[in-house]
Image 1: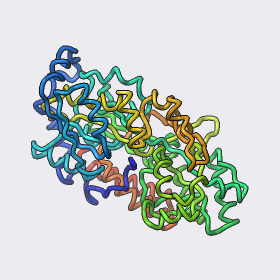
Image 2: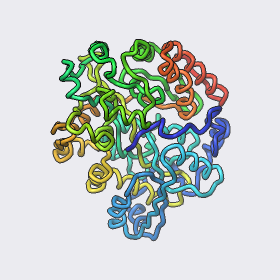
Image 3: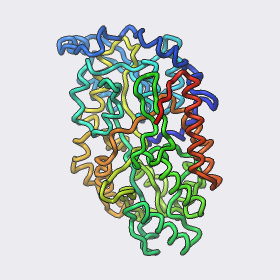
Length: 461
């Protein structure tokens, strides 16, 4: 289940760039001019097909750090096509533990893999230190049209670099209890105003039930809601300049809305992915779950007592005439710049995520939600009718949602610090039912102060 953010603790509660294996901005920028032994002379000079064929027929060993369970099935498809290439799969931890080990290996100059599983939101963290290989020379640019537009925006740099190949995604939607909605006369809300009205109606009729839970420990959902609202909390113009606007007008609209529902007791704010949270999903405390496209499979295994009672819908909208959503979760395959076998590593990253048999396996074996347009229109995928959701075509719901995710959203190059500060400001305000809008201002100040302390020029909004 490719969930992001809170499943892993921040690297540091004081600073991100002083965490294990990390470096200061000045050191990072100085390092940008020195590539590993696998770096090509020119980042944009295409590698010829003859050179690719030669590399793929030569005995080669690759190390791939990934947390994807049973990915050897997909690897086997690759090695069948390229028998000269041996791939060693290593689970170095999911998310932050893996990233910490990668930074340590890069700083030590030894022990780094050739390829690495990396979540979308952490790509800027590693491009800041020039740790990822630009895949354009290896044919990656030709793959752009195979992927949902917004995913390609997540893996691309300002100058057109391709830092990774999308693998799975988490466009956000709403899973809701049809039985509870029917009992209390609630329709799936089309707008957030409808949602607030339904929250008030339901909780007044039965104070033991909340329309939803907005976890006070979950910055992933918060970022997804900002994304949906059209906010641009972070804008990276280059490696030393960043605009930080986590408290702009659209962000404050989100904070006013959710902070108000929490303060009025109309939603719960329980920490998610805890025993009480799992119990609440099963016993009907929450009538809906704001989640991502990986949520349906996850829920069917975690709330078995509620089989047949759930349905899926798009997120309620700020403007019903302009459908929009955000993303929560998903990851990519990236090539580490120090690899000694850049051609083979780049071919593996591309093969895993574009070969039809490999991408189909990710949906049928690992139950990932796809990033490719082909699978998002494949009748065998979008036409599934799981009994847990009353025979509804849930994949189709989220495939439609994926097409509405904004392509312009960016992430900061010090996400660990950002999510720590969110938890201690915005998250705390939700948990304490205090001023969430004011907490946004605190979050803005803390991130800005940190960015400046690391040598960034923080641009005015």
